[in-house]
Amino acid sequence: MKFSLASMLIGLALVGSSPAVAHHSPFLYFNPAETVFLEGEISNLRWRNPHVYITLDTDEGKSYNVEANSVSILQRMGIDKSVFASGNRVEVAGWPSVRGVDEIFITNLLKSDGTEVVMFPGVPALWSERVEGDSSRWLVTEETLGENDSDAEGIFHVWATSLSDPSEVLIFDRYDFDLTEQAEKARAEYDIFDNVTLNTCEKKGMPFLMEQPYPMQFAKSENAILMHMEEGDMLRVFDMSSDADYSDKEPIPLGYSVGHWEGETLVVTTINSSWPLIDVTGVPSTPDAVFVERFMPSESGQRLDYLLTITDPNTFNSPQEFTKYWLWVPGEKVEPFNCVSD
Image (cartoon, rainbow, N blue to C red; front, side, top):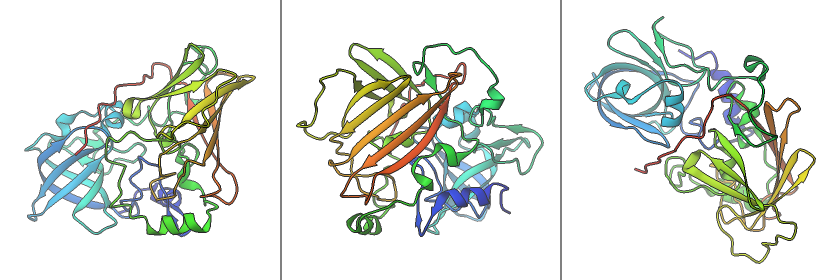
């Protein structure tokens, strides 16, 4: 059986001849064009960010590693860890590993009482009319939000990601990079399974971390603007001093960011980032890269558009532009991430 949105997901997951994916997306490691159904007993649970894992001992005598979305995503869908308690007998549906191993990414779960838990935003129920798992917080649009009075000035409040149209909110997964020959070679030699950053608590750097799908918030500080991102409890600092100069600084993962205003638009230039990747497919980034970000609030204050321009002669033949957006969703918060590595 195929989900109704599988064809859309495949289109997002594959760009040209190389797979590409948002850095929290499962589509690089699992095949959303195929659905596997399993039945058995849960024997182990790891309930933590960045992803939840369970072990399912099937009736056929196999043990499957079952990966789910993060705690941050599941809790916003109203799903708690009691669903995965050891000893629970369940049926599950999910996408198989592209490596052909006994591993799936779970999308639906049927409890022994006949209640179905939808575990991936936007995926339809498969078995039951009694459904848990509310996708609404992840599928908001400007239209469904309606008109709300903004609670803050300009960009200075919490912004949330909508997954109603993944092609508009996940930066790197829908672009055919204009790579240099050396970058093409580096990407071809990169092993995504030996170099997985997806499931660790390593602090991400620029520009990789801008793929994160969780809420973020801007705040004012003395001579600076702070950007607090839920993933990894990350804090970016944008120096707003007119004479700021970080050109001679030793590279660090986040680089050094200097901002200025162009009307209501916040423009941020970041240099000297030591983070080695653009995305999880192995497109390299070097300390020579210059990242220019534009955060552009709408007139209504309900939408924040984002434009990232990357210039790096070691990786790209020409400057590359990437876009996404956030929405102001009343009541949304930046929650503690509480990441735990394996």
